[in-house]
Image 1 (cartoon, helix red, strand yellow):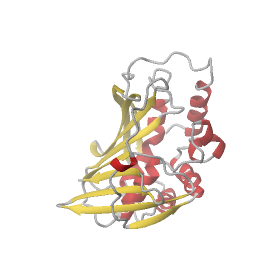
Image 2 (tube, rainbow, N blue to C red):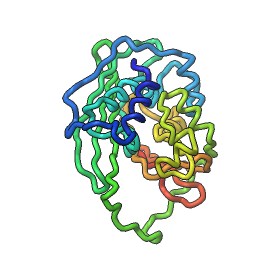
Image 3 (cartoon, rainbow, N blue to C red):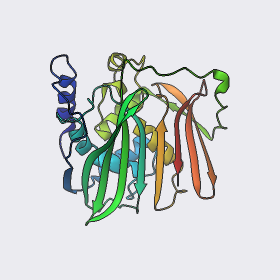
Image 4 (cartoon, rainbow, N blue to C red):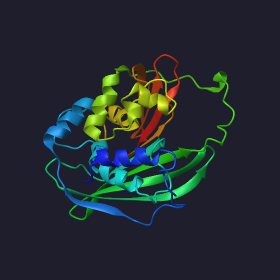
Length: 277
């Protein structure tokens, strides 16, 4: 796997005026792959603790995203990649678990980008990451990223009266700045908007914000033991989770489908909405 530190340095350098160079107009016609990826059980246990999972040999669905993330980051920092990494917004993530994966299994990963498309606030694309064991696809993740166009308007803001009341909370979680630092350490996603007040302000946030994939993992940890062995879990990241803050988690089950959400514990504004099916 590539080293994420060097890739982030490359992305930050290319964000400086005059150093970015010309970017591609479409997704690169390339697929990157790494074979023989093994699980470090100490790292898995550290991840489980940070995200709230029970310590076990079974890999959480979101842990495979972390395992393959350096490969996807290598793709996204390539010169021909059409969207610059600095300032990109992770707006949605879909994971399909075809079967449970154990810590003793060895995985192969491949990644590619697709579906570059316009968006009312800029343009977005999907980065696909696939995990396989002995040629069998066992896991697939699709991350949707948005590049904001500063000239594009965000559209009229809805009236507060139009916003539905948040569902009754199943739990309230206090999310501290430590979450940003600890998740950056275990995931390799060291974007400074999650770990530094100065880094967050450079990208328009008053405080650091939690990683979206930590929020998704924390929700799945709350549903641990109630999910099937094969499923698809899809989330949309609505608003950032500031660090520190209190979030309200809610979850309801109907006919084998879970709907869950995170809302700001003070204002009730939606931060994440998701479905397991």
